[in-house]
Every structure is written in structure tokens, then in C-alpha cells.
Length: 311
Image 1 (spheres, rainbow, N blue to C red):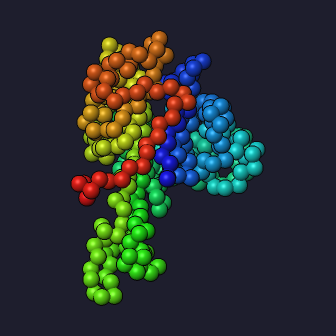
Image 2 (image 1 turned 60 degrees about the vertical axis):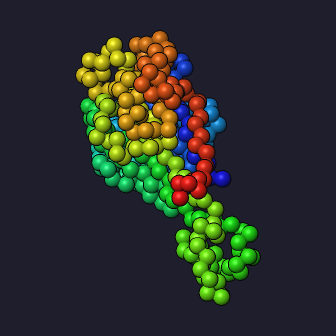
Image 3 (image 1 turned 45 degrees about the horizontal axis):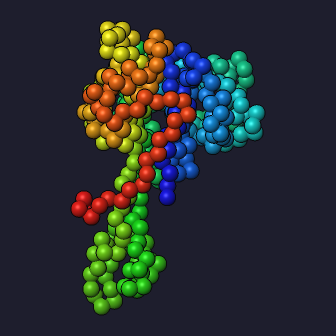
């Protein structure tokens, strides 16, 4: 079974607290590890939750505010001291490369290659045989991107009992897995659905931070299994949220409802509030499947086959 797990490394807003680090998520899809944002203390959080920095080859940065990037410099330095030689890929706003080169000019270049990828609105910024990642321009005080991670449809799983029953060879099996029907030596057509198991649903996760609510992105986050949407403020401070281009818990919940998300995860909580209970209460009145995240929380999306009625 291919894993799909999100780990919250940091859930505070601009100021870290004794219980919450600043923004960072780690998404594991199979053997691939994607770090999304890298606030101060991210490498400490990785070690705290027994996650190896060596397995991270792709880092996606939403924007260049300190609580989302201050951990990047230390993490890259530690990667070098750990003997890394694999290329590290950084995705984010265009100014990110300039920021990183200024840092390296002072502290020295890393001992391994760093490759920069400039994000663009509604642009596929990463793609391999199993996953694609789309960047979405958000609504904040500086150029800011959200990211949508989606599994690609995989080859069909063949029903092993049918191989012997219909005498399928290796070449036939390959074609059937790719969706083709099969014709027996007697000329009988066997539909692909008889030869294969129902396909797995593709899984998805969207990261939206920092941003005022932006309904224009709804078509691109529609039906995601996990939607992380910042909820810096409560509705009582909606004017401050608008001024700073952040969202309230209620606005995050409205976005989740419009997107028909499987589950809403809210975080990036302002330290002006004593705890997350008020955020959760405000959001669940609008969108019931909401969780106020804490550092160390893990969320797994299990593999599920599409039912016969949906085929």
C-alpha cells in the first residue's frame, strides 16, 4: 500500500511558543517526502518527531516572510554537515533565489547542489510518475503561493485469477494494466473491467497559507482529501485579518465548504488568543469536519478503491 501522510511540524503564526513552532508541514507520499514551508526550528521539529532531513529532496516555500523561511538556512547547513550530496530542489516566489544567494554569499555555498524553481499561478511546479504539484497565487502582502499535491492515476491492478483463466501472457498483462481489453485466442473479447480490480482513488492535499480567503482558487482545490487553510484570527478580529491579508477561522471553513474538502485543518494561530478552542468552535459551525492542528499531528489518507457503482 502506498502511504499518504501529512505531519504538522509547526502550527503557530509569526511568533513561536513553547508548544507551537512556526509554519512547516511534511507530506509523505510513498517514498517521497515533501517539506512545505520551513519556519524557525523546523530541523529541530524533524528530529523531535524522528523524521530524517536526508529524505527531503523537495521544499516548497509559500512566501518570504520569516515565519515561513527562517528555518531554511539552518536546515540546509545541517544537511551539508550530514554529508548530503543529492540535489535539493527549492520551489517558491521568484525572489527566493536572490534571498538564498545573499545568505550563501555570507556563509558559504552548500556542499551539495541547490536548484531553484520559480512558482507561477496555476502552474505545475513538480511532476513525476506518481505525483504532481500545482502552485496557486494567494492573496497576501507579498507574493505568496499555495500548493496542491495530487496523486496521479496508477496502472490498474490485474485480478490474478484471471491470468490463468484467460491465458494472459506478459505482454497481455501490461496492456490490460494500461486499460486495454483482451481478446482470447478464440477471438472472444474480455472487457478490461473483468480482468482488473477497481482502481484506487487518487488522493490530494492543499496547503493554503498565508492568505486572505480567495474563492477564485476553489476550482483548483475542489474535493481535496485534506485542506490546510490558515486561520490566524477569529471573526471578532475580521478587520485586522483583512488589513494583514490573513483569514479567520470562519473564512477558512467557508473555503472548505465551497471546495467540498474531505477534512479541513486549520492552523497558523495568532498568539493573541489563549488556545485553539475558539478557532475550532467558530469553524465547525460552518464546516463540521475541521481539526485545529497541533505540532506533531499526523493525518493519513488511506487508499480506497472506487466502488463498482462509480465506474
